[in-house]
Length: 451
Image 1 (cartoon, rainbow, N blue to C red):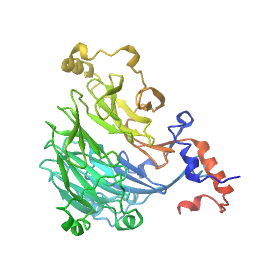
Image 2 (cartoon, rainbow, N blue to C red):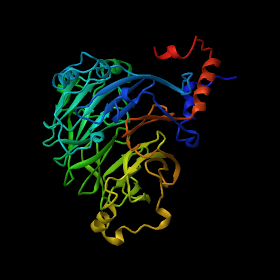
Image 3 (cartoon, helix red, strand yellow):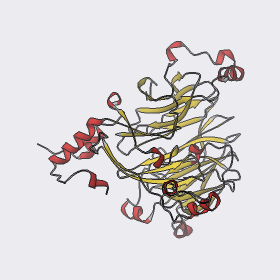
Image 4 (cartoon, rainbow, N blue to C red):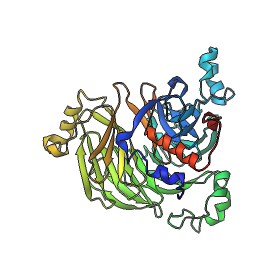
């Protein structure tokens, strides 16, 4: 019998392919997880969790092994990380908090030193690179900072905006960073990988636009000493604060939206507007690998998908009392999962929408109205916006952020009531172990895998 690589086995078992087989598992001792979270990064052996105090966020590292039974009913191994008692951020905070008990200090994770700007959503100004480093915006000095996951130390500071950074996004390959600001502009930055990662990666990808021109060639040696290079381009066209952005190296584009202007598509290579989605108001958006743009309008409670040239693909209206907290797109670009919470303005949300748009604009035919439980995570077909499956959460479990592991077999959800829920297909862990045994894996148990 031909042996199939484990990666190929997992590729056929993503939660997007088998959403009805997915079950929730609560991580024990959630008070030791650094919750609620504004960002989570799940690698094959660790979890990085940034809490909602960003940019002055606490940062935790946990060990885990997905798709591996722990022998106690969970289809994954999880070991809580312990804070670095010697971290500068933690010591700085303890000076003001005074003496604490041993138990409470044991799980006080290191905190990044930052002075945040008010009125900015924490999840919009935090992103984690594939090197497990954190980039934050929202600082009063209009900067962005590169933070280490180990000890929450500031590794680098970059400046280019004339107002606080209100949103940021990293490309899936972690080569580009885009920041949006209250100064109505966006800036494209180039991210240089750490020396360990750079030594093992290919020298160039012919399909990815390069940011180094003839003028930059002389200073290339100096730029490599910095992890964040830029500004590469300053992108203009918005009329007010930029609220959300997304970037794709493969497509070579940046998509962005603001409170009072159209959705804009810019070129990474030239820094110019390619497409303007005229009349499309969005408060959140994302990009698929195939170039589909999904937008969310909080006033009309509508999800909409467009092509890159602005052609409408599909449109659905969510419950009036709902709000979108996060969107993740599958690696194949066919599906998307959307986290939905009860709206904070549900009591007067309908009146606000009708006052802003009028009765005619709020009319949506019944076929495009969706009746969904709140809070929940919905799986959508990206081209038709048909609901493929719904994961219902309990009352009070409002979603703060979600994350997928690399092979999309596990979905991690942080909730407002300080819970970490991992959704996965339990049968997959048994298949993985069976596959490992067939390949000749031997061991005295599974627990030592994360020791």
